[in-house]
Image (tube, rainbow, N blue to C red; front, side, top):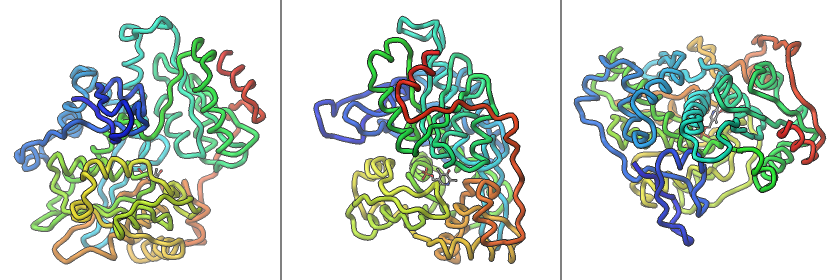
Length: 439
Ligand SMILES: *Cc1c(COP(=O)(O)O)cnc(C)c1O
Protein backbone atom coordinates (compact mmCIF):
# COMPACT_ATOMS: atom_id res chain seq x y z
CA UNK A 1 0.00 0.00 0.00
CA UNK A 2 1.35 3.38 -0.99
CA UNK A 3 0.54 6.69 0.62
CA UNK A 4 -0.19 9.84 -1.35
CA UNK A 5 -0.46 13.49 -0.45
CA UNK A 6 -3.86 15.08 0.15
CA UNK A 7 -2.55 18.09 -1.76
CA UNK A 8 -2.10 18.35 -5.48
CA UNK A 9 -0.10 21.57 -5.55
CA UNK A 10 3.61 22.15 -5.90
CA UNK A 11 6.36 20.25 -7.62
CA UNK A 12 6.10 17.14 -5.46
CA UNK A 13 2.46 16.36 -6.15
CA UNK A 14 3.26 12.84 -7.31
CA UNK A 15 4.87 11.73 -4.08
CA UNK A 16 4.18 8.08 -3.34
CA UNK A 17 5.71 6.47 -0.27
CA UNK A 18 5.51 3.30 1.81
CA UNK A 19 3.89 3.13 5.25
CA UNK A 20 7.32 3.26 6.85
CA UNK A 21 8.31 6.41 4.98
CA UNK A 22 4.95 8.03 5.71
CA UNK A 23 5.38 7.36 9.43
CA UNK A 24 8.93 8.67 9.53
CA UNK A 25 8.23 11.74 7.38
CA UNK A 26 5.02 12.75 9.17
CA UNK A 27 4.05 15.36 6.57
CA UNK A 28 4.30 15.09 2.77
CA UNK A 29 6.85 17.10 0.82
CA UNK A 30 4.17 19.52 -0.37
CA UNK A 31 2.96 19.99 3.23
CA UNK A 32 -0.13 17.81 2.84
CA UNK A 33 -1.13 14.77 4.85
CA UNK A 34 -0.50 11.20 3.81
CA UNK A 35 -3.54 9.20 2.73
CA UNK A 36 -3.74 5.54 1.63
CA UNK A 37 -3.70 5.18 -2.15
CA UNK A 38 -6.71 2.89 -2.06
CA UNK A 39 -8.94 1.59 0.70
CA UNK A 40 -9.41 -2.16 0.47
CA UNK A 41 -12.80 -3.52 1.50
CA UNK A 42 -13.40 -6.48 3.76
CA UNK A 43 -16.02 -9.04 2.60
CA UNK A 44 -19.54 -8.97 4.13
CA UNK A 45 -18.85 -12.41 5.60
CA UNK A 46 -16.26 -10.75 7.85
CA UNK A 47 -18.93 -8.48 9.33
CA UNK A 48 -21.59 -11.21 9.49
CA UNK A 49 -19.25 -13.27 11.60
CA UNK A 50 -17.39 -10.53 13.47
CA UNK A 51 -18.73 -11.46 16.92
CA UNK A 52 -16.80 -14.72 16.69
CA UNK A 53 -13.47 -13.15 15.78
CA UNK A 54 -11.02 -12.31 18.50
CA UNK A 55 -10.25 -8.58 18.99
CA UNK A 56 -6.58 -8.80 18.07
CA UNK A 57 -7.45 -10.83 14.97
CA UNK A 58 -9.96 -8.16 13.88
CA UNK A 59 -7.26 -5.54 14.33
CA UNK A 60 -4.82 -7.64 12.32
CA UNK A 61 -7.19 -8.14 9.39
CA UNK A 62 -8.18 -4.48 9.32
CA UNK A 63 -4.65 -3.05 9.52
CA UNK A 64 -2.65 -5.56 7.54
CA UNK A 65 -3.31 -4.18 4.03
CA UNK A 66 -2.24 -0.72 5.18
CA UNK A 67 1.12 -1.73 6.66
CA UNK A 68 2.15 -5.05 5.13
CA UNK A 69 4.95 -3.62 2.96
CA UNK A 70 6.66 -2.21 6.03
CA UNK A 71 5.85 -4.65 8.85
CA UNK A 72 5.69 -8.42 8.69
CA UNK A 73 2.81 -10.41 10.23
CA UNK A 74 4.69 -11.16 13.43
CA UNK A 75 5.67 -7.55 13.94
CA UNK A 76 2.12 -6.33 13.32
CA UNK A 77 0.67 -8.91 15.70
CA UNK A 78 3.08 -7.89 18.42
CA UNK A 79 2.35 -4.19 17.92
CA UNK A 80 -1.40 -4.86 18.11
CA UNK A 81 -1.04 -6.91 21.28
CA UNK A 82 0.89 -4.09 22.92
CA UNK A 83 -1.50 -1.41 21.64
CA UNK A 84 -4.86 -2.97 22.53
CA UNK A 85 -3.91 -3.89 26.06
CA UNK A 86 -6.89 -2.39 27.85
CA UNK A 87 -10.67 -2.88 27.61
CA UNK A 88 -12.78 -0.75 25.23
CA UNK A 89 -16.30 -1.53 26.43
CA UNK A 90 -19.67 -0.52 24.96
CA UNK A 91 -21.97 0.54 27.82
CA UNK A 92 -25.71 1.19 27.64
CA UNK A 93 -26.57 4.74 28.76
CA UNK A 94 -30.24 5.11 27.84
CA UNK A 95 -32.78 3.65 25.47
CA UNK A 96 -31.03 3.11 22.12
CA UNK A 97 -27.94 5.09 23.15
CA UNK A 98 -24.61 3.48 23.99
CA UNK A 99 -21.24 4.82 25.08
CA UNK A 100 -17.96 3.49 23.71
CA UNK A 101 -15.54 4.05 26.58
CA UNK A 102 -12.16 4.82 25.10
CA UNK A 103 -10.62 5.96 28.36
CA UNK A 104 -9.44 2.79 30.06
CA UNK A 105 -5.88 3.15 28.80
CA UNK A 106 -2.82 4.50 30.59
CA UNK A 107 -3.63 8.21 30.29
CA UNK A 108 -7.39 7.86 30.22
CA UNK A 109 -8.03 9.37 26.81
CA UNK A 110 -8.46 7.78 23.40
CA UNK A 111 -5.13 9.11 22.16
CA UNK A 112 -3.44 6.22 23.99
CA UNK A 113 -4.22 3.82 21.14
CA UNK A 114 -2.63 5.96 18.43
CA UNK A 115 0.36 6.89 20.57
CA UNK A 116 1.11 3.29 21.54
CA UNK A 117 0.76 2.07 17.97
CA UNK A 118 2.98 4.78 16.56
CA UNK A 119 5.70 4.37 19.19
CA UNK A 120 6.01 0.69 18.44
CA UNK A 121 6.05 1.23 14.68
CA UNK A 122 8.88 3.75 15.10
CA UNK A 123 10.72 1.40 17.38
CA UNK A 124 10.69 -1.22 14.59
CA UNK A 125 11.61 1.27 11.88
CA UNK A 126 14.48 2.65 13.90
CA UNK A 127 15.67 -0.67 15.27
CA UNK A 128 19.36 -1.39 14.79
CA UNK A 129 18.80 -3.86 11.95
CA UNK A 130 16.43 -1.63 10.02
CA UNK A 131 18.40 1.56 10.19
CA UNK A 132 19.99 2.81 7.01
CA UNK A 133 21.67 5.85 8.52
CA UNK A 134 25.08 5.98 10.09
CA UNK A 135 23.97 6.83 13.63
CA UNK A 136 22.57 3.36 13.93
CA UNK A 137 23.75 2.63 17.44
CA UNK A 138 22.23 5.79 18.76
CA UNK A 139 18.77 6.27 20.17
CA UNK A 140 16.14 8.31 18.36
CA UNK A 141 14.92 11.38 20.25
CA UNK A 142 11.23 12.17 20.05
CA UNK A 143 10.66 15.83 20.74
CA UNK A 144 7.13 17.10 21.46
CA UNK A 145 5.50 20.23 22.79
CA UNK A 146 2.21 19.77 24.59
CA UNK A 147 -0.57 21.75 26.18
CA UNK A 148 -1.47 18.64 28.18
CA UNK A 149 -3.22 15.63 26.68
CA UNK A 150 -0.90 14.80 23.80
CA UNK A 151 2.14 14.89 26.08
CA UNK A 152 0.76 12.38 28.51
CA UNK A 153 -0.40 9.99 25.77
CA UNK A 154 2.96 10.23 23.99
CA UNK A 155 4.89 9.84 27.25
CA UNK A 156 2.99 6.69 28.11
CA UNK A 157 2.91 5.40 24.58
CA UNK A 158 6.69 5.57 24.26
CA UNK A 159 7.48 4.58 27.84
CA UNK A 160 10.18 1.92 27.99
CA UNK A 161 10.17 1.48 24.19
CA UNK A 162 13.59 0.31 23.04
CA UNK A 163 15.83 2.70 21.15
CA UNK A 164 13.70 5.78 21.77
CA UNK A 165 14.19 8.74 24.12
CA UNK A 166 11.34 11.17 24.66
CA UNK A 167 11.58 14.83 25.62
CA UNK A 168 8.30 16.58 26.35
CA UNK A 169 8.08 20.34 26.68
CA UNK A 170 5.15 21.76 28.60
CA UNK A 171 4.34 25.30 29.77
CA UNK A 172 4.97 25.76 33.48
CA UNK A 173 1.80 26.01 35.55
CA UNK A 174 -0.47 25.71 32.52
CA UNK A 175 -1.26 21.99 32.50
CA UNK A 176 -3.58 20.35 35.01
CA UNK A 177 -2.01 18.57 38.01
CA UNK A 178 -3.33 15.33 36.59
CA UNK A 179 -1.61 15.85 33.25
CA UNK A 180 1.62 16.91 34.95
CA UNK A 181 1.49 13.77 37.07
CA UNK A 182 1.16 11.62 33.94
CA UNK A 183 4.16 13.23 32.24
CA UNK A 184 6.55 13.56 35.16
CA UNK A 185 6.27 10.33 37.12
CA UNK A 186 7.31 7.75 34.53
CA UNK A 187 11.08 8.19 34.41
CA UNK A 188 13.28 5.85 32.32
CA UNK A 189 13.31 7.07 28.71
CA UNK A 190 10.75 9.86 29.32
CA UNK A 191 11.96 13.30 30.30
CA UNK A 192 9.53 16.11 31.07
CA UNK A 193 10.79 19.65 30.62
CA UNK A 194 8.87 22.53 32.12
CA UNK A 195 9.31 25.75 30.19
CA UNK A 196 8.92 29.23 31.66
CA UNK A 197 6.46 30.34 28.99
CA UNK A 198 3.34 29.41 27.04
CA UNK A 199 2.44 26.42 24.87
CA UNK A 200 3.33 28.51 21.82
CA UNK A 201 6.80 29.09 23.28
CA UNK A 202 7.24 25.32 23.72
CA UNK A 203 6.14 24.73 20.17
CA UNK A 204 8.60 27.36 18.91
CA UNK A 205 11.49 25.71 20.74
CA UNK A 206 10.60 22.36 19.17
CA UNK A 207 10.40 23.86 15.69
CA UNK A 208 13.76 25.53 16.18
CA UNK A 209 15.29 22.17 17.06
CA UNK A 210 13.85 20.55 13.93
CA UNK A 211 15.28 23.38 11.82
CA UNK A 212 18.71 23.17 13.47
CA UNK A 213 20.89 21.25 11.00
CA UNK A 214 23.89 21.28 13.32
CA UNK A 215 21.88 19.62 16.08
CA UNK A 216 20.33 17.14 13.67
CA UNK A 217 23.75 15.94 12.59
CA UNK A 218 24.39 14.92 16.18
CA UNK A 219 21.02 13.37 17.09
CA UNK A 220 18.23 11.68 15.17
CA UNK A 221 15.11 13.73 15.92
CA UNK A 222 11.57 12.62 15.25
CA UNK A 223 8.14 14.02 16.09
CA UNK A 224 5.02 12.25 17.31
CA UNK A 225 2.61 14.59 15.64
CA UNK A 226 -1.09 13.75 15.79
CA UNK A 227 -1.51 13.88 12.01
CA UNK A 228 0.88 10.95 11.54
CA UNK A 229 -0.74 8.00 9.70
CA UNK A 230 0.48 5.70 12.48
CA UNK A 231 -1.74 7.58 14.89
CA UNK A 232 -4.68 7.83 12.47
CA UNK A 233 -5.04 4.25 11.23
CA UNK A 234 -5.29 2.33 14.54
CA UNK A 235 -8.18 4.60 15.52
CA UNK A 236 -10.28 2.68 12.98
CA UNK A 237 -10.21 -0.22 15.39
CA UNK A 238 -12.54 1.42 17.93
CA UNK A 239 -15.36 1.32 15.44
CA UNK A 240 -14.86 -2.32 14.49
CA UNK A 241 -14.63 -3.39 18.13
CA UNK A 242 -17.75 -1.39 19.01
CA UNK A 243 -19.70 -2.94 16.16
CA UNK A 244 -18.62 -6.39 17.29
CA UNK A 245 -19.91 -5.77 20.82
CA UNK A 246 -23.23 -4.30 19.71
CA UNK A 247 -23.77 -7.23 17.39
CA UNK A 248 -22.77 -9.75 20.02
CA UNK A 249 -25.19 -8.20 22.51
CA UNK A 250 -27.97 -8.29 19.87
CA UNK A 251 -28.46 -4.56 20.13
CA UNK A 252 -28.53 -3.82 16.43
CA UNK A 253 -31.64 -5.81 15.46
CA UNK A 254 -32.91 -4.19 12.26
CA UNK A 255 -31.71 -0.79 13.27
CA UNK A 256 -29.17 1.40 11.55
CA UNK A 257 -26.05 2.37 13.46
CA UNK A 258 -25.24 6.06 13.95
CA UNK A 259 -21.91 7.02 15.52
CA UNK A 260 -21.30 10.39 17.17
CA UNK A 261 -17.68 11.48 17.48
CA UNK A 262 -16.64 14.39 19.73
CA UNK A 263 -14.42 16.19 17.24
CA UNK A 264 -11.63 18.73 17.22
CA UNK A 265 -8.85 18.04 14.78
CA UNK A 266 -11.14 15.51 12.99
CA UNK A 267 -8.64 12.64 13.27
CA UNK A 268 -10.89 10.25 15.12
CA UNK A 269 -13.85 10.75 12.78
CA UNK A 270 -11.57 10.45 9.71
CA UNK A 271 -10.57 7.02 10.97
CA UNK A 272 -14.27 6.15 11.35
CA UNK A 273 -14.97 7.24 7.78
CA UNK A 274 -12.16 5.00 6.51
CA UNK A 275 -13.66 2.13 8.55
CA UNK A 276 -17.00 2.73 6.81
CA UNK A 277 -15.25 2.72 3.44
CA UNK A 278 -13.72 -0.66 4.34
CA UNK A 279 -17.27 -1.91 4.77
CA UNK A 280 -18.18 -1.40 8.42
CA UNK A 281 -22.00 -1.07 8.51
CA UNK A 282 -22.34 2.44 9.91
CA UNK A 283 -25.29 4.37 8.48
CA UNK A 284 -23.90 7.80 9.24
CA UNK A 285 -21.51 9.74 11.47
CA UNK A 286 -22.05 12.83 13.57
CA UNK A 287 -19.20 15.29 14.02
CA UNK A 288 -20.02 16.68 17.47
CA UNK A 289 -18.33 20.03 18.04
CA UNK A 290 -18.21 22.62 20.78
CA UNK A 291 -18.23 26.32 19.85
CA UNK A 292 -15.35 25.68 17.43
CA UNK A 293 -17.56 25.29 14.41
CA UNK A 294 -15.30 25.42 11.35
CA UNK A 295 -16.32 22.01 10.03
CA UNK A 296 -19.97 22.57 10.94
CA UNK A 297 -19.93 25.75 8.84
CA UNK A 298 -18.27 23.91 5.96
CA UNK A 299 -21.10 21.38 5.84
CA UNK A 300 -23.69 24.19 5.92
CA UNK A 301 -22.10 26.41 3.28
CA UNK A 302 -19.61 24.32 1.31
CA UNK A 303 -16.92 26.85 2.18
CA UNK A 304 -14.00 26.03 4.43
CA UNK A 305 -13.02 29.04 6.49
CA UNK A 306 -10.54 28.54 9.30
CA UNK A 307 -11.04 30.52 12.50
CA UNK A 308 -9.12 31.26 15.68
CA UNK A 309 -9.95 28.67 18.30
CA UNK A 310 -12.10 29.65 21.27
CA UNK A 311 -11.69 28.18 24.75
CA UNK A 312 -14.43 25.85 25.93
CA UNK A 313 -15.04 23.27 28.66
CA UNK A 314 -14.20 20.48 26.19
CA UNK A 315 -10.75 21.90 25.54
CA UNK A 316 -9.28 18.96 23.60
CA UNK A 317 -11.68 19.96 20.82
CA UNK A 318 -10.76 23.65 20.77
CA UNK A 319 -9.47 23.63 17.22
CA UNK A 320 -10.25 26.37 14.71
CA UNK A 321 -8.38 24.91 11.74
CA UNK A 322 -8.72 21.12 11.95
CA UNK A 323 -5.77 19.48 10.14
CA UNK A 324 -7.64 16.33 9.18
CA UNK A 325 -10.24 18.28 7.20
CA UNK A 326 -7.90 17.69 4.27
CA UNK A 327 -8.29 13.96 4.66
CA UNK A 328 -12.09 14.15 4.67
CA UNK A 329 -12.08 16.42 1.65
CA UNK A 330 -9.71 14.01 -0.11
CA UNK A 331 -11.80 10.96 0.79
CA UNK A 332 -14.98 12.54 -0.65
CA UNK A 333 -13.13 14.23 -3.53
CA UNK A 334 -14.50 17.55 -2.31
CA UNK A 335 -18.09 16.47 -3.09
CA UNK A 336 -20.21 18.24 -0.49
CA UNK A 337 -23.38 16.24 -1.11
CA UNK A 338 -21.55 12.92 -0.73
CA UNK A 339 -19.88 14.20 2.44
CA UNK A 340 -23.21 15.31 3.92
CA UNK A 341 -24.75 11.95 3.18
CA UNK A 342 -22.25 10.29 5.53
CA UNK A 343 -21.63 13.06 8.07
CA UNK A 344 -23.76 15.65 9.80
CA UNK A 345 -22.33 18.15 12.27
CA UNK A 346 -23.66 19.78 15.43
CA UNK A 347 -22.29 22.38 17.77
CA UNK A 348 -23.01 22.24 21.47
CA UNK A 349 -22.25 25.22 23.72
CA UNK A 350 -20.72 25.12 27.21
CA UNK A 351 -24.02 25.63 29.06
CA UNK A 352 -25.64 22.72 27.27
CA UNK A 353 -22.55 20.61 27.93
CA UNK A 354 -22.78 21.21 31.69
CA UNK A 355 -26.53 20.61 31.67
CA UNK A 356 -26.05 17.35 29.77
CA UNK A 357 -23.44 16.10 32.29
CA UNK A 358 -25.87 16.86 35.15
CA UNK A 359 -28.96 15.44 33.40
CA UNK A 360 -27.28 12.25 32.24
CA UNK A 361 -25.93 11.63 35.72
CA UNK A 362 -29.33 12.19 37.31
CA UNK A 363 -31.42 10.25 34.77
CA UNK A 364 -29.06 7.44 33.81
CA UNK A 365 -26.57 7.34 36.65
CA UNK A 366 -23.86 7.68 33.98
CA UNK A 367 -21.01 10.14 34.34
CA UNK A 368 -19.96 11.89 31.12
CA UNK A 369 -16.80 13.90 30.58
CA UNK A 370 -17.27 17.25 28.76
CA UNK A 371 -16.22 15.78 25.38
CA UNK A 372 -18.47 12.75 25.70
CA UNK A 373 -21.31 15.06 26.77
CA UNK A 374 -21.01 16.99 23.51
CA UNK A 375 -21.08 13.70 21.59
CA UNK A 376 -24.03 12.31 23.50
CA UNK A 377 -26.18 15.44 23.22
CA UNK A 378 -25.57 15.79 19.48
CA UNK A 379 -26.58 12.15 19.08
CA UNK A 380 -29.64 12.42 21.31
CA UNK A 381 -30.88 15.46 19.37
CA UNK A 382 -30.72 13.80 15.98
CA UNK A 383 -31.40 10.08 16.48
CA UNK A 384 -34.32 8.73 14.47
CA UNK A 385 -36.69 5.93 15.40
CA UNK A 386 -35.11 3.22 13.26
CA UNK A 387 -31.59 4.05 14.46
CA UNK A 388 -29.34 2.94 17.25
CA UNK A 389 -26.81 5.45 18.55
CA UNK A 390 -23.24 5.10 19.77
CA UNK A 391 -21.17 8.02 21.05
CA UNK A 392 -17.47 7.95 21.82
CA UNK A 393 -16.48 8.69 25.40
CA UNK A 394 -13.06 10.09 24.57
CA UNK A 395 -11.71 10.85 28.07
CA UNK A 396 -12.26 9.83 31.65
CA UNK A 397 -14.40 12.35 33.58
CA UNK A 398 -11.80 12.59 36.33
CA UNK A 399 -9.38 14.22 33.91
CA UNK A 400 -11.78 17.16 33.87
CA UNK A 401 -12.95 17.21 37.47
CA UNK A 402 -13.16 21.03 37.74
CA UNK A 403 -15.75 21.00 34.97
CA UNK A 404 -17.65 17.99 36.30
CA UNK A 405 -17.95 19.86 39.59
CA UNK A 406 -19.77 22.71 37.83
CA UNK A 407 -22.43 20.16 36.81
CA UNK A 408 -22.37 17.92 39.86
CA UNK A 409 -21.18 19.92 42.90
CA UNK A 410 -20.87 16.81 45.06
CA UNK A 411 -18.39 15.19 42.63
CA UNK A 412 -15.09 14.44 44.30
CA UNK A 413 -11.96 14.02 42.24
CA UNK A 414 -9.03 11.80 43.03
CA UNK A 415 -6.03 13.67 44.42
CA UNK A 416 -2.78 13.37 42.52
CA UNK A 417 0.51 12.87 44.28
CA UNK A 418 3.38 14.75 42.69
CA UNK A 419 5.91 13.66 45.33
CA UNK A 420 7.77 11.40 42.89
CA UNK A 421 7.54 13.80 39.97
CA UNK A 422 10.76 14.42 38.04
CA UNK A 423 11.10 17.29 35.64
CA UNK A 424 13.70 19.71 34.37
CA UNK A 425 12.88 23.41 34.40
CA UNK A 426 14.24 25.80 31.81
CA UNK A 427 13.69 29.38 30.76
CA UNK A 428 12.27 29.99 27.32
CA UNK A 429 15.81 29.62 25.98
CA UNK A 430 16.77 27.47 22.99
CA UNK A 431 20.39 26.95 24.06
CA UNK A 432 19.20 25.36 27.31
CA UNK A 433 17.06 22.93 25.35
CA UNK A 434 19.97 21.94 23.10
CA UNK A 435 22.09 21.35 26.19
CA UNK A 436 19.47 18.92 27.53
CA UNK A 437 19.07 17.12 24.20
CA UNK A 438 22.83 16.59 23.89
CA UNK A 439 23.38 15.61 27.51
C1 LIG B 1 -8.09 14.80 20.99
C2 LIG B 1 -9.40 14.67 21.68
C3 LIG B 1 -10.64 14.84 21.00
C4 LIG B 1 -10.72 15.26 19.56
O1 LIG B 1 -10.30 14.29 18.67
P1 LIG B 1 -9.88 14.67 17.17
O2 LIG B 1 -9.33 13.44 16.58
O3 LIG B 1 -8.85 15.76 17.31
O4 LIG B 1 -11.11 15.17 16.48
C5 LIG B 1 -11.81 14.63 21.69
N1 LIG B 1 -11.80 14.30 23.00
C6 LIG B 1 -10.65 14.15 23.70
C7 LIG B 1 -10.72 13.82 25.13
C8 LIG B 1 -9.41 14.32 23.06
O5 LIG B 1 -8.28 14.18 23.78
